[in-house]
Image (cartoon, rainbow, N blue to C red; front, side):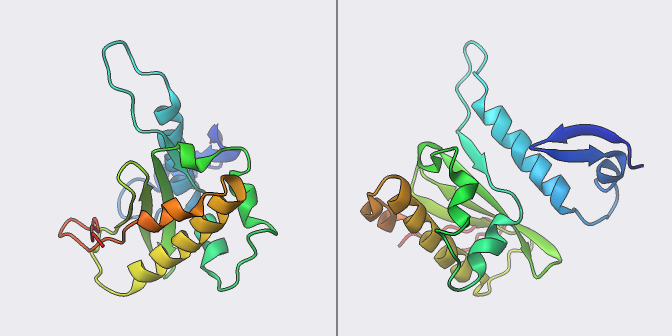
Length: 173
């Protein structure tokens, strides 16, 4: 079961990890990270002739949000290193997997095409969690933007979102 069958972004994918995709097993960090990196890799490929290009995606690792959710996170110390090799502001979508309460995965999406923050939650929870996620992401984006582009004012147009029945949140400001 521990036989390595593939590798993505430096993480080994074992038969044991793949088995977790069957039945009602919990998805672990490796599955989430590999899925995000596969989506990102596909978005960077040249489209086939006659096909529209896919949105350009940057998928963060699962531990990214843990780093920015703590009050007073140290951007200069280490958080900016996750994007030092890529200008995320040149991407269409940012995917941020979040392990909510250590028992449920949600996905925060920053959509630069329409300047929206989204939270995809299959439970469709209508708690204050999305407000905290959006505040943390907005703070981090502001700091990263100032660090990389130094044009922070454009980020103020990002809008929070309200829950829809399918778990996608859309709330115009």
